[in-house]
Amino acid sequence: MGRMTFDADVLNTPELIEPVTRTFVWLIEALTVLFERGRDHGEFAADIDARNLASLVVATVQGGYVLARATRDVDAFDAAVEGGLLRSCVRPQNL
Image 1: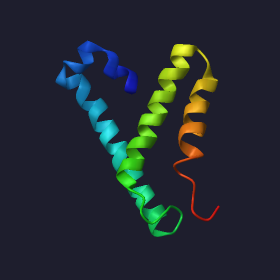
Image 2: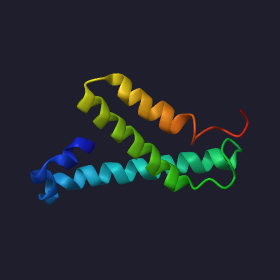
Image 3: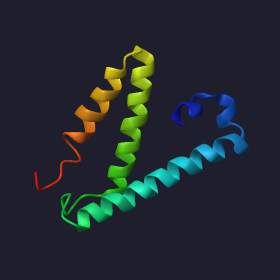
């Protein structure tokens, strides 16, 4: 989905950008609910901002796709997701 935002025609055509926008908004909202539940069940720190974390997850994954495509190396995606997010930002309290 994210790479569609690099196309000027998509960005300048409401009928084309609307589904992209709708998908990202839905994804961030769904992840926000998931992280709120995790926080409420003690799986994440009590002071976690669920919406900010959801946005970070989406941005990290999308950025990982860009890196992997640009370098033609799937390890770039793994490094972005594992190194930048999973090991530092989303570590459950009980580990």
